[in-house]
Length: 428
Image (cartoon, rainbow, N blue to C red; front, top):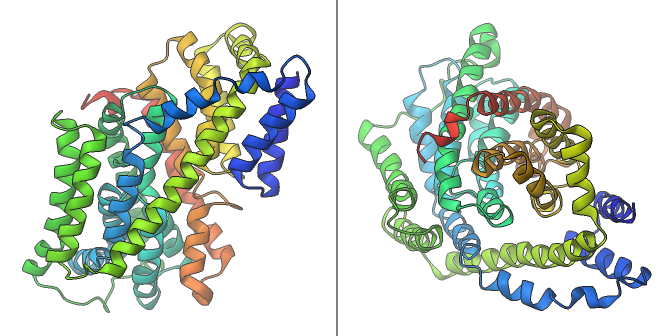
């Protein structure tokens, strides 16, 4: 029961708004101090755990992929892509929204940084969609959900973290996420086309889109596609590890910004370097604090209690999966994917092994679920990014109204992956 109290205290402090690393670390120290049979000796192995984290070659891919995304954010690639795709679909009803989804998918496969994708498309695409007469809810939902595709489409930071937490090959997770990510993109496009057909006034044909030549469209699409294929293709072919391909991706992003968009300069490199250091530092601080938390939590018998509950009291694999997915979804309303990855997932992993569930398939289910945490109010980060970039041009209530159908589509994608696990194993 003490372990459950520890878990509840952590969740309560997170919902209050205290920084995650401080919550994990302080709760672990407090419970170790207050419980005599534990004491601070429980942290005797912590330095070895920290050394293992710092020497983990897989986790080195995190700052590299973040740096790649930040370089591409400043390279004007998204703007060129969106203009080109909008021109290609300008004669289709709802085509502007479809182009936003396709650009979001390409940015996801090129950068994987959600904040950059959402902000870029909010600044570029939202004014175009509003001037074309699009329903504000549809425009907001399309931009927020498309910008969040980087959480499931490789190279995804979520998949790298889950690979480490669940002790699964990141390369297999990347390959397993390809088809589920494409299914989600397809569901978004089908929904937009149906919505546009049923409500022509909410998604009219865009007449104010710049006419771009076929050559310009190709020149806008080919460079990011080459970068995407080279980075992910080297992993899928077994030529390079995720960390090695991430390093290659950073070099490719720098060359792309220098050659294609002439945006390479010292300020851009400074921005990408500092940004990747800050984001990576935050993730690793949370990981170290979560390690301290897990030492105390496991010593108190928390993991054994949960394993007994699911394997003996419930005893059904599908009930376990349903409870796990519903719990992650509800927690996603209040805390983000990093906390869930480091608090909830390690608790579920022993139960997953006890039931004989394939870890790659289960990790993809979790990743699809965690993607929804970026879109669920009141604390969905993508909604904050969109509102911050859009300013007064759109109301918060309109954003919330527009995102609901896309959250439902994510649930549909999750159910499809549950029913058809071959979607995960097609390329593995």
